Structures are given as structure tokens and as C-alpha cells.
Image (cartoon, helix red, strand yellow):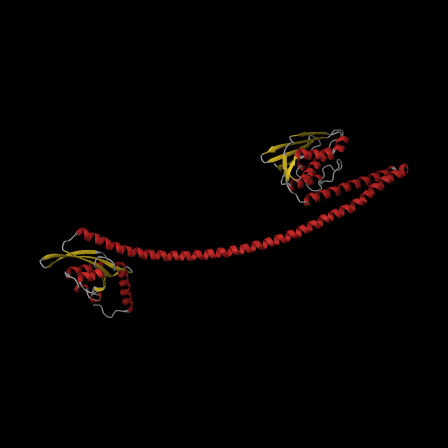
Length: 426
């Protein structure tokens, strides 16, 4: 027997006994576990006690050699299993009451830290040896050992999985925290945008009121200038020199230009600030309305008007669309070579989801290097030859953009211009 056992050895024996208890307690085959070089029995299952006809407490703690016959073969087999770590089996024949009795041993090591600290022993006793049964039992017991190994592997994998779950939980917590911070930041930005929008709206209202006030206050003196210059030319008559009459005409012309400029500024402010609600607008009806407003100019200049393909509807804002058409048509009437009757041609063509509207003229045309500039604010080409404030096409571009469209021009010097804009189909 092994004496003077340390607490570590006692702990190891308890662990080994618990392992055996979990795997063999209800096994129908007699099994025992021995430990150390002395082959001390540390555990027996109920089937082993039944085989020997003894109680467990009478067996545990004793050398295995005291319990079974054929000691030499059994002890040698145990020593070899503990030394090599390889399983082994042995069958011995004994005599009992003039009949043969077979004792069959299946022994396999109990490993701790890659070291054999003991051995499991399965004992079978029968009058007739069934080699197939023994082989099956061996496979079953080796399977139990394999199951124990798999249990250890499963425990390691479970521990690894728990670590991964812990890390994932931490990552998810960090993600939730980041999302919370992001949501707080988004709410803060929304509040800032709302506040800036209110401020901008109020500023726009003040600017619009200022523009209307300035325009009103300035247009009244301009009308006075026009009136007094006309009265001056009429009352002075022949007493006014040619230079004086020229000065009066210049004053009147400048007042007219300033009045037109203020009118265009008001139109630009209005088209930039007003609320635009897009609805279905019939192009033919919009063009008819514009031509009615320009009827006097068309008659005075003996202009020719063509219309084609306008029986479609677009998604637009009726007042804004009317302003765009009016500016393009009035430009076609104003910008014309002297001695040539103006031509204004309206036509429309469908392009997938859009409708392109053309307003063409027979004017002097626009040089290629200037075609990207004409929509800019206060741009006037040949301002000394043709009337205009430089705001008409800027208003056209702003109005089309407010309706979700785009605008452009195709022109050749001496052959006229073709202005176009695109809006979505209604």
C-alpha cells in the first residue's frame, strides 16, 4: 500500500474516483480503478462488488492482486499498461468445482498531464468464453475513454466560446454606446439646422421686405425724372438747344433703364423667395398667356410666332413657368438685327421622363465663348446695341431650377439662338 500521501495526491485520487463514478456507476460490466505502482484500488462499481460478493468499502484501499486470481499475469499486465500507456487485455482460466471458469481482463490507462497515474480494469467471468463479447466490451470501454477525452476537449472549446461571447458582448455594448452618442449628435445637429433655418427664413423675409421697400422708394423718383424730363423738352421747345434736348433724352432713357432694372430685381427676388408648389401645367395654355401679354410688342415689330408640339403638360409652377417663357420670348423680340422682323418659335419634344421646351429666335446669335456667361447676374452682351438689364436670363435659370429642371442654349453667330429648358412630365 502507498503511505504518507500528500494532499495533492489525495486530491488527485478524489478526482479520479469522481471520474470513474460518473462513467461506470451504472455500467453492467464489473469495473475497478487502481492507482500507482502498488495497484491500490481507488474505486469499484456495484457490478464489481457483485462479482466478488463484497462491499465497496471492503475493497477500496487494498491491492488489486488480493482480489482476483491469476495474480502474475494480472500484475504484469497492469505494470505494462502503466509503463507504456497502452491498453491491454488478458484472459485466464481457473478451475471451480470441476468446471472451467474464465476471467477476462481489459485494462486501459488513466492519464493526467500525459502521464499514466492509474488504470481502469474491466473484469468478466463466465463458464464459456465468448471472444466476440470480450472484443465488444473492449471497444465499449475504449469508447468510454474516448468520450472522456471528448468531454475535456468540449470543456476547452466551451471555455473559448465563453471568452468569445464575452468579447462580443463588450463589442456590442461599445456599439450601442457609439450609436447613442451618434443619435445625440444627430439630434443636436437637427436642432442647429432648425434654428439656422428659422434665422435664415427670417433674414429672407427681411431681405424681401427691404428689396420691395427700396424698389418702391426708388421707382417713385424715377417716374418723376421721366415726367420732368418730358415736360422740360415740351415746355422749352425750340428754346432748348440740341445739346439740352439730348441731355433730356439721356435722363429719360436712364430713368427708363433704372425702372426696368428695379422691375427685374423685384422679379428675381420674387422668383427666388416665393414658395413653389409643383403641379401639372399645360404648355400650350402657358404659351398662349405669354403671347397675350406680348401682343402689342408682336404687332409693333411685325414679329412672326410659330408653335409646335405644345399639347403636353409638365410638372411646374404656373407663375414661374409663365415668367420663364415671357423672358425668353421678350428677348427674342428685343435682340434682333435692325431691318429684320423678329421670329419667335415655341416647340416641345418629349425625352423619356422629361419634356424639353425650345424658344428660338432669328437674332444676332451668341459667340461660343459667351454662351456659358449669359445666365450670370447682370451679364449684358452688346449692351450698347441692344436693350436689357442683364437679369432676364438669370431669372430664367433661377425659375427653371426652382421647378427642378435645367436650362441651356445653342447658338451660332448670325443665325439666331435656340434656348431650351427641361421639366419633368406631369
